[in-house]
Image (tube, rainbow, N blue to C red; front, side, top):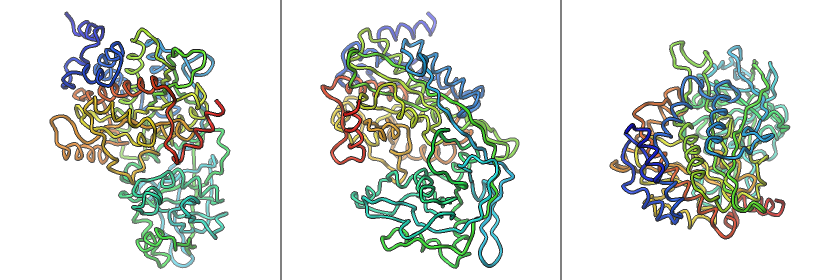
Length: 569
């Protein structure tokens, strides 16, 4: 009997998941049954197959797809592949015009090597900078050539947050100037002040550029610090040496120069002004801080290749039993895009220039496809509709999910939960998970119950300063009120110490995350993806089976938006 037939028989009986892969939980049916799933749903969950996941990851991260760049041929192939898989699973199209594709219009800007930038003091010699090594920059105004010659203003963390009585821009006219900004947000251990040691959206680089533009600045320069950004300069370099992308119809104010500089470059810049960077950063973390002018200009000529193009979210639906009045749909999401192919200017000729994105995020897409197959294997429809969305342009600022949130296949008020899957390291069978933001929902007791059935320990965020809740696609749904969180792996695996897992995670961040080395390997262990898919199915089915919709806890930042969306379904 050949292996594929054995696989089909195992799936038919809802038994074990994978051939020739690492050991899974001793009894997957016990876990899913213990989670309260009906027998047929439990069998579908137990039948989630590591070899299916392996096949999806192998294809999506192959060189053929050239890194799945947004608006690239490889990205379009990935979208068509995902649409075909949704169709094979038996899902209904939920994109545009009866298709699986939801078209999104973009404008892309590729910074060219002819770009120059320097800091020019009022007195003394200029400080020239080297593109990619010292700084990265993008012109958000979509001009092919832009000249910036404007004074710099140090605005601390660049945050205006009335609810925390904080305004770094008070008393400052930023029109025609360039903001110099510290990454992250004011240090705090008080959960009532910028949520203590957990990053809020105010600490995200996207907010800082948006706010500087709203204030009338022509440019903004973020000071990179690895301890605060939670990733090394190499990640900034690889991300920003590629094309910057925006929604084509976005009418918000834009910067001519959206830039990052290395910490040591910022140190030299402050020295040109007769100031100490460390002292300035310390002062910026206090309420006494006031923004101040620097006797230095940013002088830049930014040359760009500009293009307008389309990419697609891939959206499908499994109709629920409540066809007359859908009120509690569950949305599963994962981003399929990655960084594409690095421009030749980003490294030596012999460098592997394809950012294959095997872990980030072919694994999440593979989980999404296996969930689709599992749901459609159940004979009876789910209590409410289930939406599956593979979104584009996550790596460009979560733009595909932003568009999906603004144009959902069902009104936001009718979606009770968004579960997002973004990167599952192939390190083995997980014993712990991270569910950033789940504790903000009335659904959390159910989450704890299901995690216990799977014998998962729920870990707190080990890097709260990273602001993980605001760095993945579930955030786009939260912004329109949908209760949302991402399902992530923790720091404990069967047969391994916590220290081992933490070291593997550090190594991944340093050597693989957003690097061409994120490639498919035959020895990858996809048991983590299998367990996350099973867990995701149990969570989703529980949400579909609740007597009423999930809500944000009282006082949450998204509670008011949710109430408004439910009043206007």
